[in-house]
Amino acid sequence: MRNKEMLLIPGPTPVVDSIYDALASETRSHTDPRFVAIYRSAIEKTKEMLKTDGEVFVISGSGTLAMEMAVVNTVQAREKMLVISQGYFGDRFSKLAEAYGIEVDCIQSEWGKRVNPEDVEKTLADGSFKAVTITHADTSTGVSANLEALIPIIKKHGALVILDGVCATAAMEEDMSKTYGSPEAKIDIVLTGSQKAIGVPPGLAIVAFNQSALEVRKQIERVPAYYCDIYNWLPIMHDPGKYFATPPVNLIYAYDEGMRLVLEEGMEQRHKRHKALGKAVRGALAIYGMRALAEESDAAWTLSCILYPEGVNDSVFRSALAEKGVIVAGALAHLAGKAFRIGHMGNATEEMLEKAIVLIGETLNEMGLSVDPSEAAARFRELTYVQA
Ligand SMILES: *Cc1c(COP(=O)(O)O)cnc(C)c1O
Image 1 (tube, rainbow, N blue to C red):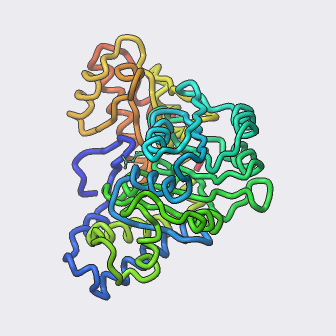
Image 2 (cartoon, helix red, strand yellow):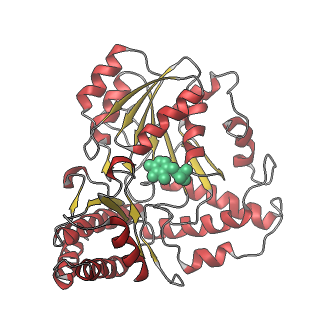
Image 3 (cartoon, helix red, strand yellow):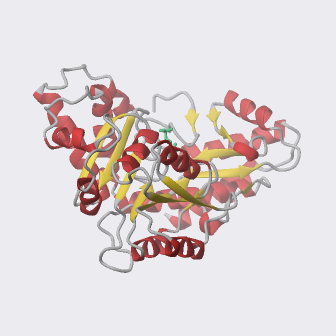
């Protein structure tokens, strides 16, 4: 890898050389048949990854735009939407929906915990909700959503399932053809960004609508958006040579290469790998007395929020670690200063993460703690070996 640093934040994540090479290809016209073929292939690969029978949209924007596209094309002003929030990015759905005059109800878990499915059941029984949003892996807390429990409940009440996969897609299972208990119990919309578990530089919003979600859009005469209206993009997704708004040509080259790598590894292997890496990172850091905020059974496979042991100063730790070439992120909201977040997704390799574990231990020792980096590295190898 050409990278000089290990970018272990919850996105952007490490980019591999072949993706950089694709990004640096000659910029062509967005209607040049050579580009159009690559755009078409990128869209097809995205469909293949998510196993959707519907439509995917790959456009300029960040994950937040993808969230907005999902909501604005399905829920109208004065209709009700339920947000299942397990942290900061769950709450973002509430603010976004309120901006469009949607009536939002939010079930908020205690940070680090999952929402209780019984609370979801009770709330849904109380009112007619058009859609329910789930954050698959909340990037602020490292908590994953329990799809097996939530989707059947939501579907029983006839609402659409909108899944925020910004920190999960391509790493945690998001199979849109999978049924959760009954034939209609499926994920209706998956939305994501290019820069997290997919491992491509930031700049693309990616959204998939299944047939039920497309049917819901059909019932809406006019959505209160223009760039975000999927009907403006549908002709382009069917024929990427057509024009609506200029696509980010070079980023699409990079994304197509990123998706090629994703499919080459295979979804099952990617799920296994991410699950094992998450477990191994948390297990190894525990040797240093660093505990994850989430319980292991609820933990995301892609990133972890790790509480500092007594006496470790957040900014001193992160800048000392950055000098060794390892970049981790601070924690958000009330956890700021008390925890850090480490990504272990996308193109991050086992070797890279083991090295990072050792450098974290060395940093802690320099700060006056007494920990054993080689013991942590051994634990990391043991956990990846057993799980992989
Ligand atoms: C990062 C993230 C977002 C926001 O994505 P941007 O690309 O920063 O707009 C939304 N949801 C989750 C779960 C995220 O991790």
